[in-house]
Amino acid sequence: MARVLTLTLNPALDLSVGLERLVPGKVNRTRETHLTAAGKGVNVARVLADLGHDVTVSGFLGADNDGPFLRAFESMKVEDAFLRVPGETRINAKLAEADGRVTDINGPGTAIDATDWQRLLDGLDTRIGDSRRRPDAVVIAGSLPPGIAPDNLAALTARLRDAGLPVWVDTSGEALALAIDARPTAVKPNEQELAAWAGESLDTGEARLKAALRLYAAGIEEAVVSAGPAGVLWVSRRGAWQAIPPHLAVASTVGAGDTLLAALLHGVLSGHPPEQALRLATALSAESVRHMGVGNAHADDFPQLQQQTRVRRLNDVDAGGALA
Ligand SMILES: Nc1ncnc2c1ncn2[C@@H]1O[C@H](COP(=O)(O)OP(=O)(O)OP(=O)(O)O)[C@@H](O)[C@H]1O
Ligand SMILES: O=P(O)(O)OC[C@@]1(O)O[C@H](CO)[C@@H](O)[C@@H]1O
Image (tube, rainbow, N blue to C red; front, side, top):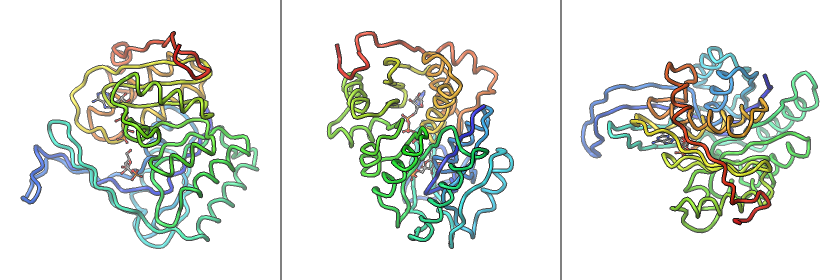
């Protein structure tokens, strides 16, 4: 069991709405609705805690509507180290149609000022310096709230790396680009996020692999690229792998990427062989799309989903960063 700290600088209450078909501009009747404490780092924490790790969640939570988070953290059995800031945490709507299409409507989040940011950094320094609380790995996941600039994220990444901690980052846009320059241990862009960084479209497996190799060559030890149903590429010092998930009927893809990142980190921290780690992570992310929320490793058919996940080592790729 490892000790993991997840940082969600811009958490959200996810209002997940299941409906037959979304008709904009009309009254739509829902099939189900859920309000869930979420945001990428919280979703990652949910999976890691479920897989048996000792997890602390932190970041910034609006003080006025933190009730669902408190209840969630209690049931997840994670330590709540979120700083409370004035106002409300954003509510993000996830409109999931019967054909698997999801429309995300994400708010900007609560503004964070320099004093709050410094409180977070000071708290992290104290935690890192305390051997009883020092994490084995830190995950920073999700967008940045107003007031936090991409170079703040880069500085945070560098600070944690300088303290000797593995840092896994999942974000997008300029924040991702600057975080990469600060050399986190791992990043997990999806196809669009990686394309924005690479400056070209990545609609073929070969283009994605080349971009993943570029990430690795840029100093990212664990370069993980997700591509929805097309699966995962993972380039690391141990080699390069591709995983293809089983074909499943999609209910909601929200949280699939978070599930993948969490489960792969679980495999790495547990010292599992890469192929086994990637198989479990890919299968669990696939499991997550069958329903709303993150993947459930206790699903009855999870062993079969793992068997149906195809993992292959890319032998013609050398980990030095070039296609042979
Ligand atoms: N339709 C699908 N069928 C099977 N597996 C899927 C499907 N969509 C996603 N997955 C699995 O989930 C992983 C992550 O999905 P994706 O690439 O969409 O991440 P993402 O865009 O970061 O997700 P999100 O931000 O919504 O959590 C994929 O690599 C794949 O293993
Ligand atoms: O706006 P961000 O921070 O990029 O993404 C936030 C979010 O869409 O990511 C999670 C799914 O990955 C959701 O729980 C949450 O609403």
